[in-house]
Length: 356
Image (cartoon, rainbow, N blue to C red; front, side, top):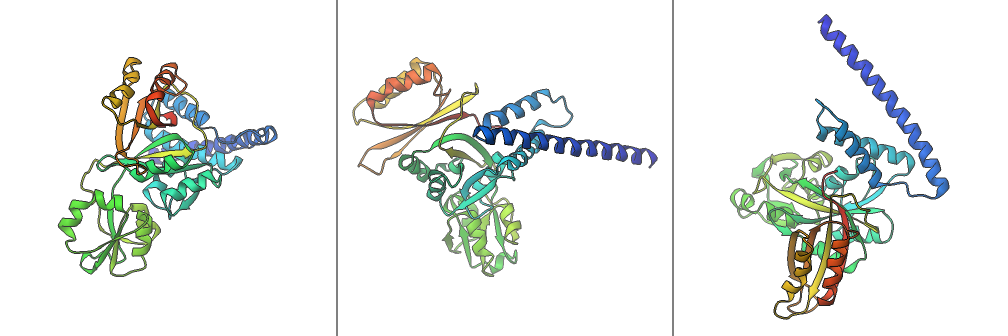
């Protein structure tokens, strides 16, 4: 026990040093904030945050894991930014949606989250400058692209500034936790789709009531003794619900990709991707002609998806992701070469590959 106590005291001393250094760092951050305020410079610099994370993970020799190091420093950076000026981030609400979880992953818990009632609401909040950033879902690994989000990019002049990949696990929640008492299920339509087979097998004949988000579903279930909700573990804690069943998603490799939207997109990092939307003239070989410049420039298209434009019969909108940044000469040249063949072309943004 003497050796154990000695090691524990050593840990206490290290923790004291960490605390002292965190506060020393905070004082420097406050000084930087004064300089930025005097120069009317922007407080939030995602490029600087990414530089810090990449530098520290490259220096880390272990045994402390890099993934955990990034999580810890995400919170340190988030708390430091709040000392300068709290960052406002819009997300699908109420809080505890998966969009909120993605926003937490990217911005840290010290950001000021502004819940919106719909994906359109998130775009509205950012467009009106009530928040600097917004987070919206764009595609699910099992259900594909979220068409409504693409529609919003056509209606708003906002850019993609980052992406967040989040593993999704759905849970059936209720006040009692007793499946026999369930008479209805509140659920957000994407969550319902991702749990379709489980619902059919385990809740046959139980009506599904549409909610505007998974968190709203949990909120409604918390007010009804005979209701349940499909929602996140965070929603269970926030709305004081019990688990009826955990991990009810049909696929256990269920990921959703979220996009961070803002007025601008970041500068080059060297490991970027660019997203565009376009529609083409209805003629033979039109899509081939559009894609040829990318082949000639040896640009890898990582995603291409089409959907009806909803503005004209048989007109389609294509959503494309490609490797590279809009400031890369070959990317810019390829986009310039495709313009004449497009009825509509919009550059959604260039941003780092999901990670930091």
